[in-house]
Image 1 (cartoon, helix red, strand yellow):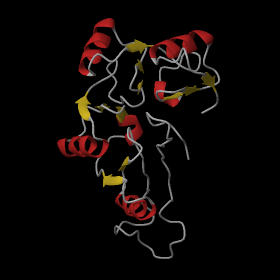
Image 2: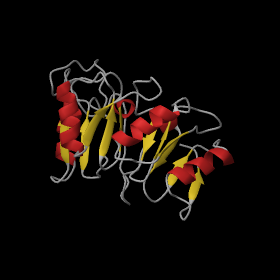
Image 3: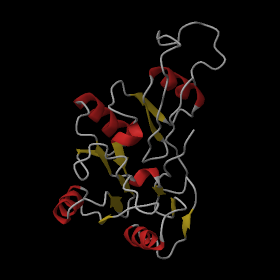
Length: 215
């Protein structure tokens, strides 16, 4: 189980990916959705709002609906090209998504997260959730993103300040080593002082505490 993101306010929220969750405690030979127990079961929670979640698996959707408060909206995404965390980068206003996601998935993301959805690539990479981290204050994107692309992307995000950079001593997979909200950021312990300075600046954390920890 991996925690990848904090919500944009003070309440933590998580993206989770796992296997065998549906099999625990079940004696039947099939899942509740009719699929074989040998089928992988995986799910991903992806809130920009702590009361809104996305799920990748219908069985886990059923489980979440019975485990979470009624105020939390849960919808199932039947098709995705990777884990949802790799396909979506979001804050409280916008979601950058994998450009090959279908229209229905796009509508579900917009409805559940309550955001404007933008199909986009980051430095020619379709896995925007891996190569970009956003907050309501700014965003860090793949280091190969050109100045022109940064300006275009910033315009799409209502002039959100963006910077190209790395984490963990040169890693371009931004979201694998960085989680951020409007109050603080957590990044991998290999992140250098120079990288921290860029992160601190673009996310407006000069008056907050930046921490380098293992994630």
